[in-house]
Length: 58
Image (cartoon, one colour):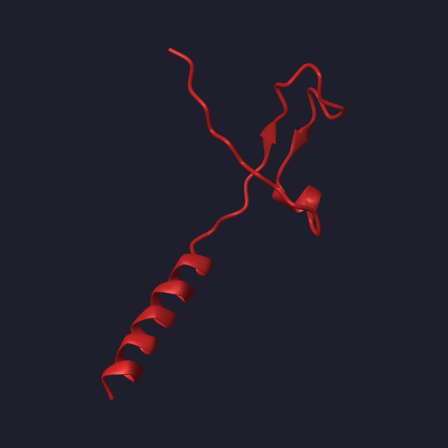
């Protein structure tokens, strides 16, 4: 019973995390990129490995 309870809790948190990921589009500001100046987002890279980094320079 205890194992089932933890499985259901873990599954619930996993589903909430997946449902909270929203789509977004941003302008590519990397001058060495092939898509420089274009509006791109995760949907442009479906099927590929896609890493998003939101950096900040002080």
